View 1 (cartoon, rainbow, N blue to C red):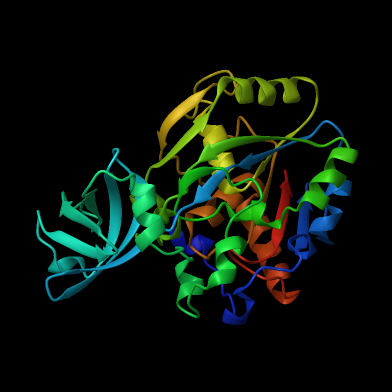
View 2: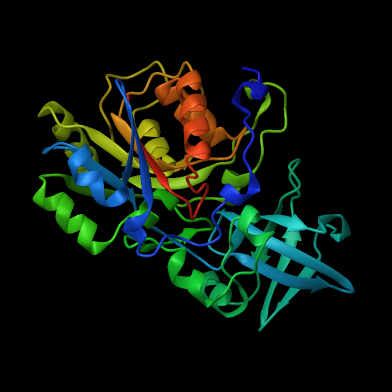
Length: 345
């Protein structure tokens, strides 16, 4: 499809630089087959049904941005995919100054050797020493705020908590599963009282989630792989929920993409979710037939992005264009720290 079909004009003042306080005070745009409704996240229990199942991503953001030197050159690295015990694939700023085998000194006793430059400009970084790479990152790395926030302000102490969800447990993401940022213990208690259940899975979000679609056609876009795990108990619970008449609602596009990956290749399988562990590079555009989810709670996404294409596949492109026009006119807050939408096709 032509990428221009997924474009829209977003005033820069609609980009949220800080989250709502408290988190569940964020606004919620509810879209179903019949209506569009303006609500708050605190209203979510009344928008769902007893027996519905929310599925959260329990990944935890790691301090995946590093600043270092290769001789006189300053090198910036954003890790985005673990490739081995001490190897990460990274997008590199000033990468033209690197050669295969160069050692980058990130300070604080942290260094890595660059090799295997990919056609997308990323490099493999092999970290020196015996300490776990997570320990090295805690010492030398910093929180990787999304580029549309980082361009307008630096990361600070507040982001250490603000950019983690209440479900964060499994370290490995370089971007937060931001739809879950809206949830609080109080909201979870209200959902439980309404008969809405929840389950977790793990997908380590990579920095590729922020990459623009540069080609003119969606067929030309290359998705970057992200590692995920959905175990047998989780698969059984998702299948049982739907068999009992409940709905599986993915909280965030990361949860949705992993569930759909666990249903097997598009056009195959019996619609059941199965255990999954490994990399997924699933790219969902209009025309895709959803098999594992019945709805999605997600933030508002960038124009021309793979995530806006995904929500357009779920609800219809014209419907989502109209919904985003409504959200802009009604002054909803966009992107990672912004407001949310509940999509129920």
